[in-house]
Image (cartoon, rainbow, N blue to C red; front, side, top):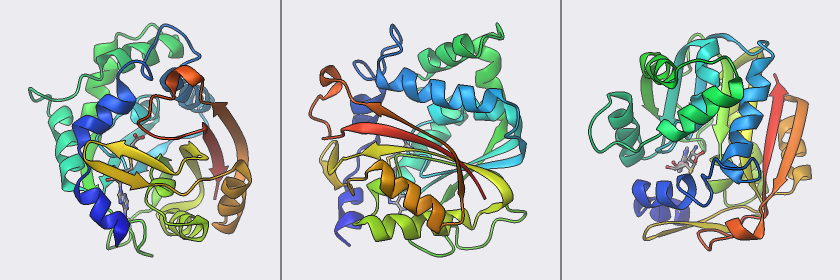
Length: 257
Ligand code: SAH
């Protein structure tokens, strides 16, 4: 209930400013956190192994950076979020409406690290074409979308959501089990998330976060029937500890159901 109340005050623009503008979104060096996240995703999708009809992104929030490498490998991308304000923010970007957040530096950077010489506008168009559904979701329900995804997703992605909506490690593990049910057997799961974080700010909202260690991520994946393929971590440099949260680092996990 406390979490739900916190999210009623979540301000998407403040969240975007805190996390997706400099200093965190600084593309001049790979030492910054946003380029690190984009590289994890670009390298993982570069294998060509993770592909199919549908990829579902759980707790998309107001952001699309996490879909930029993914969108080349799926016919449809399903974005989801609990909050209408975030789904509206995403819709504005998908429709190319004025006032939408400017993701072009992210798209340019991903085209650069993917190294195929693709014009960034082509990737932007492809993601907009493929982002056909933006659905409400609640990861605390065994059936997070309210009805099963049919057919189930070929891949599942979730960035900075499960730990940011769970009061404790048990709830985090349960939420992962719930969202894992959206994935077909054999499907790939990619998780990005915060390590050792206890809160983050989004305008007037101060959201509690369950502080995770890498061992918690490993245990939750195993408990959800997901076999770990790769686990990486990043230590938040002092210059990026800006007071918008108390995050120690970031993990990236690739697992398979
Ligand atoms: N994926 C984005 C946003 C993460 S912020 C990024 O990488 O930055 C956490 C998100 O979880 C918010 O968008 C919030 O609206 C969403 N959320 C809050 N409660 C939720 C719930 N019960 N189920 C699913 N998502 C929830």
